[in-house]
Every structure is written in structure tokens, then in C-alpha cells.
Length: 80
Image (cartoon, rainbow, N blue to C red; front, side, top):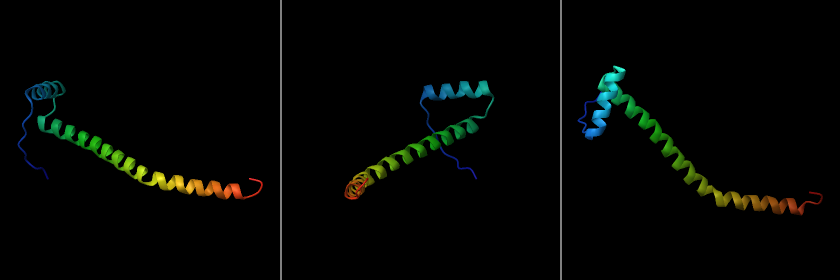
């Protein structure tokens, strides 16, 4: 199912788009759908990256604490 939207493009973006779709012989709607789908994939990746950075920062201190505890245990075991 498709949804109709009203879209206002900057003049330069519109002209570039028109030039490209003529050269590749593709309907404007198809071209814009592909462009938005590509941008959505990029944004999903960026959002995932931000989430991973936040989660990594959240567990960083706890990981250091656990690492120090293991180091203490290693130091207490003779021969290690």
C-alpha cells in the first residue's frame, strides 16, 4: 500500500533530481522512494550506533570494577 504525501523540495534539489531521473529513465516517484529507503537505512544504522555507544558507556564502569576484582583474585592465587 502506498501513501500520498505533499513534498516541497528546494529548487536545486528538484532540478538535480529531474536531471538524474531523465538520464536514468526512472519515474520520479520510484527515484524518491529509493532515496528515502536508502536514507532510512543510514539513519537506522546511525541510531543503532548511538544506542551501542550509550550502552557501552553504561557498562564501562561496571566492567572495570569486575576486571579489578578478577585481578585481585589472580594476585591472591600463588603461582599466577
